[in-house]
Image (cartoon, rainbow, N blue to C red; front, side, top):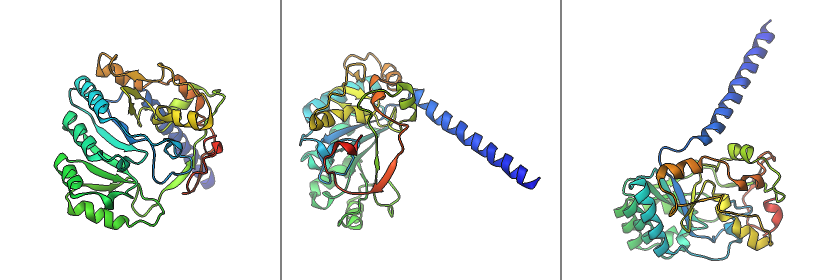
Length: 289
């Protein structure tokens, strides 16, 4: 009898867990209450991690045009009335942009109340000028660091930021170093769009701003690097993003971002996720397929 009770309790716990997962997935179909987004200051990177889901390890060097960026933010700020939840300035490696601090100031001017941070691997922090640190402090811009298993003094970088009054955080538990996982693209595009969207941790969460367009998922925003490197043609049509200059309201944008897009059929969310130790890319297609 005791074993039977334990079995029933275990089954009930499993049922509750499954329901929780379903609820978590379905929440993606709810428009966010406030816009949040990320933007690449640099498309390329200085660490070049294997299987990078932003494809920065195979991207050709390219920097954000701050004139166009300011124009895009002006439009977004108008639609959002200056409100946004959080904005990540990232990449690639954002500190490869020589005017990363200026990009941060532009962002703060357009979104005075948002949480804004430079999302970095930290390697270039020790090379930044006093002007960089004072600019970040004055504009209330934080540093968000991903810790990698490399020969770099992260404690010194943290101390430097703290000494300048700049908020410094790790995107994971500090003692945990970066691991990699294999994300699987289905080049044949045979996946179910809705299923992929609901199971994707990026969908309606890792919203990407690029060239006046908003994407519900950062992967589709950057798939061009994969296409170019491996001579593929995974299509990104105008049904996969919303043009901020054509959108008439913030609500229209938020509702679009909460829906599956045609590109979702190229993402195999049912493939086993394999986690492995950090290493640099070999520029092989199998890192993503």
